[in-house]
Length: 201
Image (cartoon, rainbow, N blue to C red; front, side):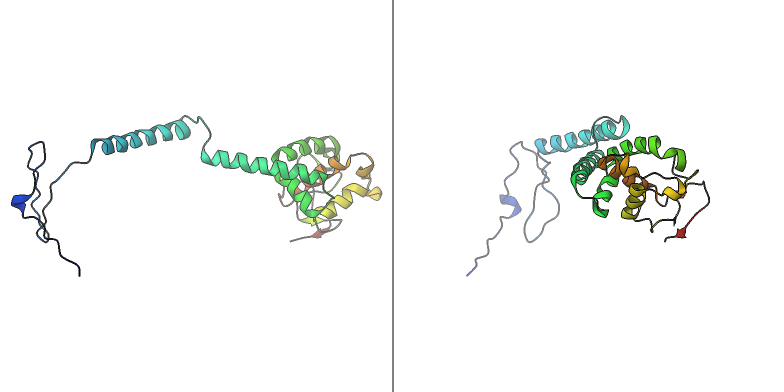
């Protein structure tokens, strides 16, 4: 059977050791309490946290030093994409492998240089079309704009239109890069040559 423990009356409550009498006015079920201040170590920790938060905001968001959580996340994603792209370069050509190359920004920077060297003359600097068709609209002459369709066209060429078979002039790795880069141009709708071919949603 539980036994109720009676609280001491206010007259028997022991006063603080420093002699102050900070007994609060309210009472509940015969219990009264002292208005004791927070411990000094707790208040010091609280204010240290406040000061640190201001310093953190200034250092990362105002002064722009260090790496923020968002930037670290972006760097982690970039590293993961780079690893995936390197693996994709060793894989058999497929839609998935080419998509991994598209996701790697550094790989696409190299591919942009290759595009400028090999493809810009016919497709213009941003793929908007010159002699060759606009690669940024939603119309496709060969296939439906899938990465493997693009790979087939770039690889085998279009002799009737003067486009060479690039598989005879580029390495397999370079061919993959070019195709992945063209994949990144799809749907950008850069103003240029009038649409040709079949519209693809």
